[in-house]
Length: 175
Image: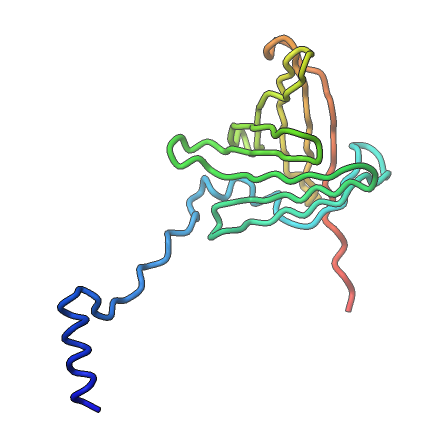
């Protein structure tokens, strides 16, 4: 048995195929910047601000070695969507790409400002005025998160509320 393995080991060494240790895993996205959306991670019941009329479920997960925050938006009526959020390694800014059940995608960018996440992007509107959208995500003391969306059709000179949601943590299942 030794005589058979020895020539194999010599052949592997000669061809550069010697047993190698696997490469180390990629570094985790564990810097403070990567934690900017941690307050939003969880499973949520979503309500228009100031009401108890639930309009959606939402599941937000931190995935892929902590490098992505993914939202699955599941409205009770209508079509859902998904957002993929990450920190741009070159700029340090947060990026969000939203894809819903209608054609196209929307891209937002921004970051944490005074403890809130602020993302801005252009919503495509074929044949209409270009609409700039600003979303502000604010953690509340009661554990909920407010997502306030504002729209501007004058390049950010003036803003009007387009949506205002409160994400309330789903109740823990009792066992």
